[in-house]
Image 1: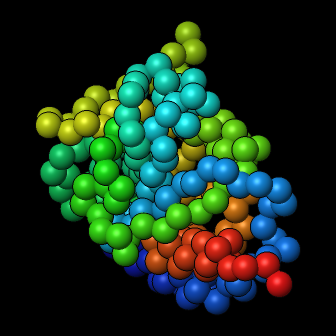
Image 2: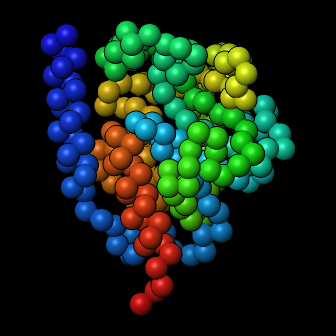
Length: 219
């Protein structure tokens, strides 16, 4: 257990550093109109992104092949074995941190905002430019792994769940987790997220600061 303990200590230190990341300035925000909205949703230690369904499906070829006519789309990223299992044992969570076999992308339609399982205080809205939204859609498509024929690799569904799980690109670890993926998505969209972004708290608090900055009147 010593290597795991060492990694968790490093994660704690990184989390403290992330909390000290400098707040962005108005000049860091993308210039021009920002007609789109993306919501960062926090579920305890996990963060995900909530999209307007028609808008993201119109731009993501991967998602559009499997989803239609959803008011919202919720997307998240995590360890393949732990994320997809309905009741994974603790050992699976530990293995995910130190020896993950592959990551998974979770995608599912939602009818409400906040989505089921979250409250209003768990979501924060971010304004995205048209260019940023297109870059975000491309980031999502790149996150879905493909087989030799270029088709998505499906990992199945949980019973009674509206979500589909795809094998994802990249490597999951304690240093590259669901919150790192959300931060990367926001960065692709031009949102000035900074810090190590290893914790849900770090990502969510940065999103809150940026959202307030976007809504503040120009001086």
